[in-house]
Amino acid sequence: MRRQWRQWRHWALPAAPLALALLAATGCESAPDARPEPTTRAPSTSVARVCAEPAAGPAKAPAGAVTVDPAVTGDLAAKTRNSPPHTTFWLRPGTHRLAPDRYAQVIPKEGNSYVGAPGAVLDGRKTNQYAFGGTARDVTIRHLTVQRFVAPHNEGVVNHDSADGWLIEHATIRNNSGAGLMAGARQRVRASCLRGNGQYGMNAYQASGRLTGLVVEGNEITGNNRDDWERRRPGCGCTGGVKFWAVDGADVRGNWVHDNRGAGLWADTNNNDFRIEDNVLEANDGAALIYETSYNAVIRKNTIRRNNWVEGRRYADRGDTFPFATVYLSESGGEPRIRARTDKIEIYRNVLEDNWSGITLWENADRFCNSPANTSSGACTLLVKDTRRCARPAIATAPLYDDCRWKTQRVEIHGNRFLLDRSVVDCAAKCGRMALLANYGTYPDWSPYQGERVAEAITRAQHNRWYDNVYVGPWEFVAHDPSRVLDSGQWRGAPYEQDAGSTFRARDGG
Image 1 (cartoon, helix red, strand yellow):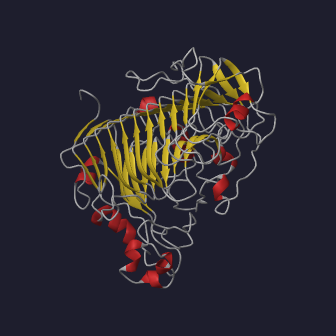
Image 2 (cartoon, one colour):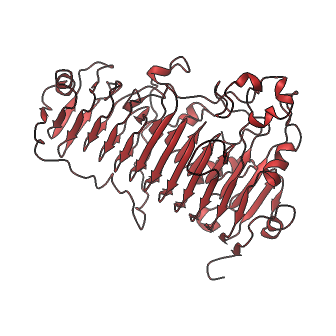
Image 3 (tube, helix red, strand yellow):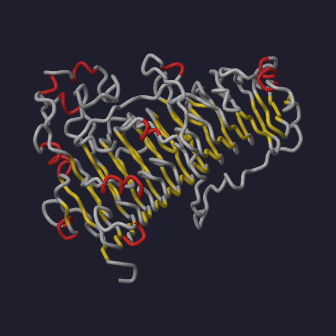
């Protein structure tokens, strides 16, 4: 699933109604037994404890609002059809239902607002696939609980068609199949609870081009991927508390992302210009954060703890020596030629405590544009407009191949605090590792990246630097390839020369 080292993962873009030409959506499969609600204690400085303490909506209808009656099945959809754009709808307390048809849904008009009274719930009754769909811009949903819809795999319940400019605020989107929420350009998701959805809490994907200007702020994102899709479709790469695809400009801040099955946050394929800051990422089964085949990001001031215990242990028990990390950068780096608020990936002022491992920077030597190892999409990279330039045999000659692969480059990791108590993590070995590595290139036979070429580049030539960090606990380091496990002295010495100015100690106060 992670490193594409001994096996190839199937790289699939998510399906949506407007993207069936890219990937046909499958029907919704029956879910396994419901996963217990997360039991993680709130962080000591809670940034987004919104699932247990949701903000109440207005007890009276706002001036000029259309009142929606929960006793009338389909009242919300009917009144939406019969009202002009820019109408505000106030949903009375109680359980609101759509018509008993799988495709029954609310199709907002431009500028509509949907505001829930205290106790207002829109319930799909395990019958309706979608709650809010259509292409209308600038729709607002506030103080409303949306639950028990059964969107198919890779599709979403709220903003099903990834319309632009939506505001989701003080909402609870829970216990749905597929993704609780899709995203369009300029979407803002604030102070909302995305909990217990079958695949994703949110699937940030738009079929028509790149998704720009996304804000995810102050949300609690927990217990998602209840249907355990990585087990049902091994290697699908189709899960996460939030999954981002081709998002150009995102601010992800102040969220509490915890107890998700699989990764907490996963930016996958041609994302750019992310700021991920002031979040608490904890107790996710997989990595807290994956940034993959993407560019230019700032990851700062996050608290990241007790992640990847489930997946890290699972692979270690199988004898896998790969350094599975809590922050995992795969074929991702800084790229000055792409416009962004930074021209590198900078990871700083974070606290990582008692995770399975630390930060891994990885680059697969056999994964590049139009190689058989890359099956993600036809649009291989932002930098190559004509991907035919990357086809065999032109790829074998410089300088074209320099733009035909994703490089883990220009990554700076500094000012972080890495804490590890193996008695807490319950691991004797293969945890507590930092890594900077690639595989030995072998595939295909015409590849220009065979041998140690990429391993040498990522380790020594692509400006990847750790410095001025604090390490507490029995940390180890992996450099060049998975077989080279180093102590701190070897990591800091030639030829790697990492972590200048950093401090190492066995325990706090030691």
